[in-house]
Image (cartoon, rainbow, N blue to C red; front, top):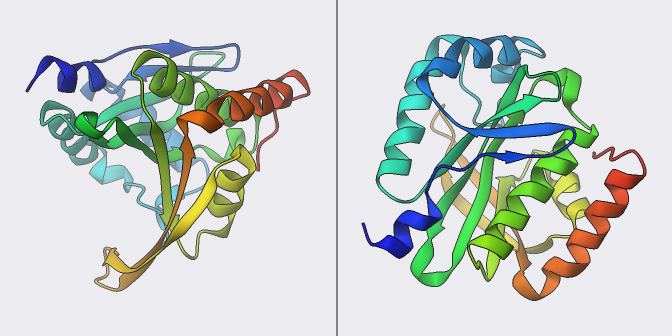
Length: 204
C-alpha cells in the first residue's frame, strides 16, 4: 500500500461535544451488542446491521477492509462514553480522492439526535480538510426512506439510483440510491451542520 493510500485509512480518533469516533477494535464487541439490542436493529431488512452473534465476524471483515486499504471503520461513543453504534469510510479511492461514508447504525436512543449530526460533521471535515477528498458519497437502500431523508438533509445531492446493484442477505437484488457532497459544496454543508448543532442538532 502506498503512503497516499495508507493516509486515507490511517486510524484516527474524531471527537466533539456529543460524540467520539474511535478506530474499531475487537474488544468493542460487547458494547456493540448492547447498542444493537436497543431497537433490535438487525431485524430491519433494508440495513446492513449485524445480528448479535455476528458482531465478531462483522468487526473482522471491517478490519480486513482497512488492512486492504479501502475502509476505515469507527466505533461510535456517546458523550458519556457508552458504545452506541458504528460507522466507517468505505470504497476509499485515494488515487481519485473519493470515499463513501456508510455502514452507519446507531442504538435507537441516539437516533435523530445531535450525535448523528456531529458525527457526520467530524467525518466530512476529516475527509475534505485533512485528506483532501474531492467528493464524499453516501449510499442507501431504495426502501430505507429515513436514511434517504437524512442524507438529503445533510445537504448531499442525489446522483442517481443503481438498479439491481447488489444482493440483500436473502438473495434479492436491491436498488441503491447514491448521494454525494463535492469539495466545492463542503463550506455550505459545514455551515448548515454548524447551524444545526448550535440549535439543538436534531437530525432525521
